Length: 341
Ligand SMILES: Nc1ncnc2c1ncn2[C@@H]1O[C@H](COP(=O)(O)OP(=O)(O)OP(=O)(O)O)[C@@H](O)[C@H]1O
Image (cartoon, rainbow, N blue to C red):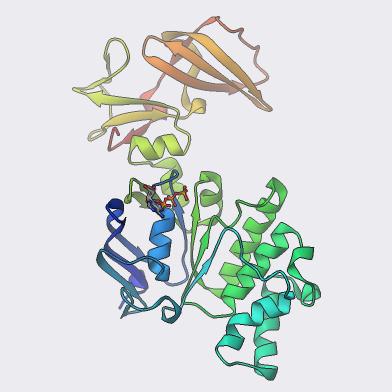
């Protein structure tokens, strides 16, 4: 068996009663990879993780972990860890006892237990807090306790459901680095769920973008950010101006715009605000809104083509609302999408 299929989902189909949640999902995860499941609310991220953890029956398909079919194996025998958004720590127990809990259930005690627990606590940088009760700790520290408690069980795969969503902006950044550090140090295969594209781009080795219970695109952060395949993914990673191509022309709100130099096979063209030429070009639009963002200024333009978002250097003179400006959509700065939806 190759490392390519350390964790393999094969035609995974999941449903809540008559409501389908995930349909025929195929995914191969390497040993030691950090994978982000990214997508809008309701696309099936949590349901997929619950199925891998054994908390959700599989309607059809197969889950294989390290060469073993675990599709119908009980949750506690899967060697899969799951850290919930809420951490679910025991408030009356110390950090040490929270982390030791699962090992005690397995019958471990004494020095062996202590060594393992303290090593797990050390790996998340909480050694000085081992005897503290968890309610007396910050959100980020509690998150680390939850991480240590799962890691100490030495799962083959550790899954985290929106691990950073309860933290404030500063702690989120700190825990992002921490999570990456712990993962690289331990070589643990990890899957985390997020609907935050910045978090997925910053953390993951590969990103799995989901939509309506299926995989829309799988790739490295660079692939997803620079080479989105569909309008759905492009829009998700900040290409805000997207036009479908039909018969060699862009389909716009008004007249079709011929694009003789469109890349072969492209179904749509997409521009980030920064890639739109502003102040000159073939087209004209009216400033609908303008927002200052430090080094840049963003304009939303009302144009005969449809809405266009452009970003320019904030040092340039600002345009008033209602002002008429010229702009262009150069093919050279566009991403060519294979799917227009
Ligand atoms: N307990 C449930 N009973 C019935 N349907 C459910 C239940 N939980 C989820 N669903 C449905 O299954 C689909 C997938 O939901 P899931 O929770 O996996 O999405 P998600 O991508 O994790 O969303 P979020 O980002 O909001 O957590 C959705 O259509 C959802 O409405």
